Amino acid sequence: MLTVAGGVDPVRVDGRGKLVTYREPSTLHVYAAPHRRWLTHNISATAPVRMMNDCLLIQETGTWTAFSSYTGAFAAIAVGPGAQLVNPTTQNNDSLLLVMDGTSLHAFSCFTGRWVTRSVNSSTGFSVQRHVALLVDGTLISGLDAYTGTWTDTTVTNPPITLSCDGSAGIAIGPQFVHGFSANHRTWVTHTLPPGHATTRSDDWMLLWNATELLGYSSLRGTFASFPVGATGVVVTRDLFGIVDSTVGLIAFSAPRATFTPALGYATAMIRAGAGTAVIVDGSQATGYSAALGRSSTIPIAASAESAAAVIGVAVESGTGRPWCYSGLRDTWHPAPLDTLPGLPELTATAVLLPATSGAYAFSARSGNFVPLPGNGIALLGNDQSAVAAAWDATHLHAFDPRTDSWRTRPRASSTPPIVQLWRTSMFVIEGGQAHGFGAQEAVWSTIPLPSPYLFGRANSESGRIATSGALLAYSPVPGTMTYAQFPEFRRVQPDGTTAHFSIALAGGGAAVLAGGVLDTSPTPVLGLGDFWLTNALATVLLFSPTGAERATHQFDVPADPALSGTQLGFQALALPTQGSPHIGTATGLYIL
Image 1 (cartoon, one colour):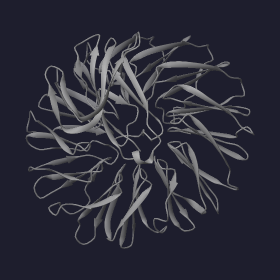
Image 2 (tube, helix red, strand yellow; image 1 turned 45 degrees about the horizontal axis):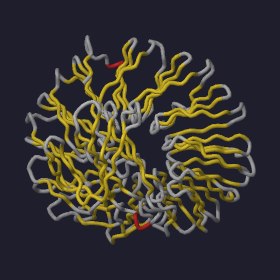
Image 3 (cartoon, one colour; image 1 turned 90 degrees about the vertical axis):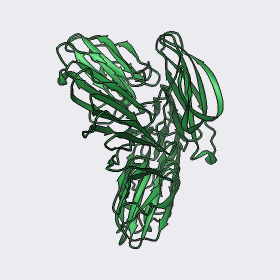
Image 4 (spheres, one colour; image 1 turned 180 degrees about the vertical axis):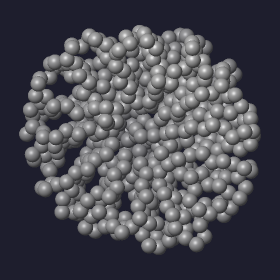
């Protein structure tokens, strides 16, 4: 909680991703969700501040200072008067900052919390977005991955003409070849350009096509894939896949699998698409497509309505109104229980909320189960852009955890309708003089009494902020043990054959014991330390924070084995911070694609 003398000025409040800020004339207050506390930095009244989802940049004369939500630390670098931030304001900016300063190019990664510098010249070209950056200098091209903050160089036959960055994919296209850089694998691959090609792309992939060939690049696999079918155009573009209208029907390209499907239907079919799943209704059949698995399944029903989200799909059977739920993590269809109310239910990123004659159900994409929530007068909360699936009634607040097929419930302090905001992985609820927070990635309720009446608030993708008359409260929905990967609750994924990264916040530094295993359906209380959520622990490792750092990190290489696709692991740490008491942090899940 940040106490503000004279009251909170809404104009001074900002927030995005994991960050919340409050700016006073000579001080910038910054809240980083992973560290769960406010930090301060001296700032001049006129200094611009650029905020990204995972970091921010303070542009003082002669010195630019970056702040990382992961490290919880400020990192300054000296710059000349002509320094320019390369990141456009009109694009999606997450974890990387790129600064052109004369003959020096400075790059900052929120994951490492460090600046790296390399020499460039006036003819060097750049591109940056989300977690990848590219530069080209003649026949030298280089890719920067945010996860390690290192450049990977390669030499090509001809200088590239265009550069494109998004997600973890960097694309450089020359007169004869297309070059793909993967921030996940830190590798370059090259393929001959299809003659007369057209292109489209999204977070982790690009498609090139002409009248006889489809060519896809996946940064999640670090490879190109070719398909001997021509296309006339792209009809769906989402984070993890695209669908083209081809000479043989609708064809999907999966970034997680780097594969093309057989025809999914005709161009006249109705398509509903989420970030990683599509539902295609064509006459008397409904097809669910999973980009995570690169597969599809069909059921013989005529649908009156359909919808899709990240790893979820729904088709409503004509006549009966019965919903059928599709799991994009299992490639399976499931008919709703018979006491489910007819019609299109509420979709979230990883679950479906279905009202029933008595209570409700949550359908989990992870397990394919319908988990009941008994009760009366239940109001369901969710949207297809967010992973939070929740509900409330007269006496309780409920939130669903698809990782463990369980409802997390806590008593209410009032019977009047609550104020609710949710977005992506974060939700807060105001009722009875209290603020309740819930995060889809950690699945734990957090409650605090409001020091004064509620004025306004906002839920961001991985943080939340609430203003009262004299204080600004910030909320963290992210786990105490964080992975860089967020899928399926959010965007970043963990393919097999890549490195899994972990970060554990430690106030003042210290040590941590990280355990890995399987998430249990209910916790085991550990006296004086907190709740332990793992069962069948596979391994533990002792970690120490580096000198001056307030976090411990760990990484391991996930074997390149397709059999690992769909593996769900849990991780949790015993934190031994220099400042504060030992405690068990909240658990996180790791889903391997």
